[in-house]
Image: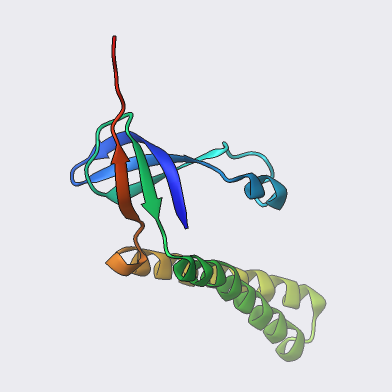
Length: 136
């Protein structure tokens, strides 16, 4: 997937690129409209503030990241529910252990995110820089 964004900051050897969320994000509703319609991503490369850049993230990686983000917490929730219902034989305990399992799944997902985020294969790649023309 190739997306176009605008450079909004520079930090060492990385640039901060702001992307507008795609139209399909409006249909999801996961953020419930509370988040802005823009997202900022840090990418290795060089450009100037105000430049427009093309950035690529391979589609296969996007699918894997989505699976990690949703499946691991769901598995934690299911294991927690199972433990509470089978071992403790109570709906209240099932709900509580389900929430604990969900929390554990989210923590595992965060740890994987940090680990995978440090690997170059999982990083977005800067494809092109279109310099802005600031004429005053």
